[in-house]
Image (cartoon, rainbow, N blue to C red; front, side):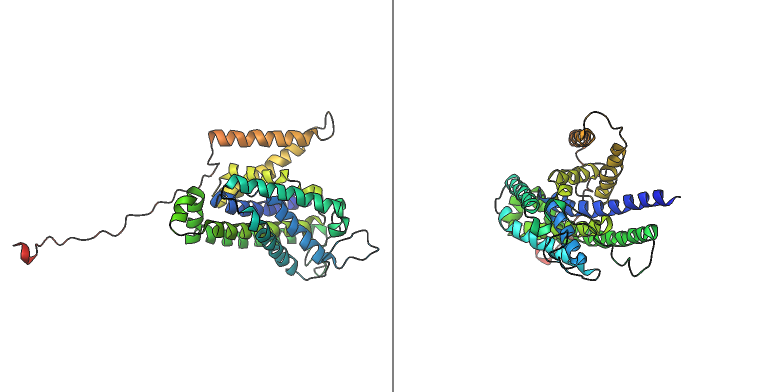
Length: 332
């Protein structure tokens, strides 16, 4: 296989890993817990920027890139810091976005926050270089390995796969734990759960912060592979691509969500890239979003559970109480 085809395959595999981690984060919030996070792409972008500036080093006044928080941190500290920044941002946003009791009100607050944040970052060039974003972000551990482009790419695929396994183990433990069952109960009937003494807002905050950290980690993995990131890459509409993958794959099912990430954010988008250029610029992108919209409507109408629906949990009968057939002495 030629070097060009190898690097194309490497790019697809890394993007699959990044998208799967992000979809697991959104599935934990929306699919398992019922929290409609319409600001999801904001956390992925935050992780990307934090990991980028903590790898690039301090910003100099004469540099073509102007940003804050610059440092040279060794791997994996930029990724850990990105996840921590995502968790902190989720806590700050959740402190007021999760205050309304209705989920649709919460979703609208998060959507507005996402739009405001994108506008602020784009307009304030001194924060993260404005619309130009960050560039020349190096890959972790590559300089010391003395590898060529393809070899470093395969090394990064292995690093992404290892990160995926760690995240899957973490998510699987959550969804299979008593806390995971409590989150599903919160999704299905929050009023009934609250009547049992469970603080719904506190549970929503926990899962919101956890998902925010995972989304930020996916952004950190992405920026150190592609080496660049700009506000135009994390438009609010990108959030709904992840929602499409979660719903089509199987909301609430970790393996189903991984299938959805592969089909929607991998195979489906790659096929649309090969559409012939015709008419005006941007028509292909418009066709992409129209096709995804029709696809999600079709699944919501005919197969709302997705390709791999969430498994119904059944609990066995409780312990039966044995009855002594011998009558008591007083009954004789």
